[in-house]
Picture 1 (cartoon, one colour):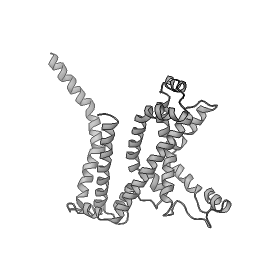
Picture 2: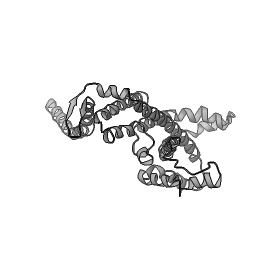
Picture 3: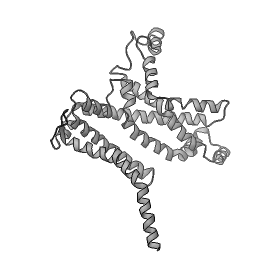
Picture 4: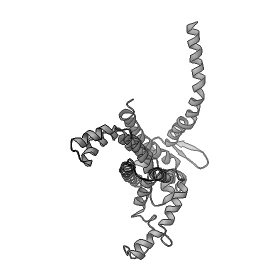
Length: 288
């Protein structure tokens, strides 16, 4: 009787999780394997495909544009992760203090993160507009830092840095919230004991605050690396002069050469890089 009851519970469990397994399979597993299939084929617009083996991967690895996109992605991920983490840390430390209107300020700081991407992108494009934008009016007409106006967002020299600053501004509230929640959980007795021992604010930060939030900072850095490597909409909508790997994959597969085989190969190379960071996150952060 006991065995029968356990079998019934097991069958019930299978029936309950089966829909979730099917949905995950359709949304995640199937696209990955189909992408793998495409990476070994030369796919035509008509839908016809022919097996080409590792030719797509060889073409990608020897393509100078791929390595430029890889370098751009590395710079973008490094500076956006660093900027978001440091800026979020500074804001969290400031918001951890009591001051009038604290609740209102904390709420306003969330606006960049919760605002729709398309709306804030248009706002930034207007801000940097070479004709009517406030930025060019200040740096050219008022301060005289540049001799003439130019489109900063579409400039090959500055477009990447504008995209980096935009990403830091857009995503720092998430970092700030995570750090702030951990800061508020630190025992105040630790700071009181440190003050009795004559510790300054800097020493209290390095010997109490930083060790207490170290785990959170590690989680944030790894998550931001994973997320920023996949960033597409922010960069694509903001400027057409920055090609990270997701943007380059889109142009390779759906515009210009319309080479879906090479586009799939690029996405799988990026997927392999992401998997390494995910494994690191699981082992070091989640401790699985």
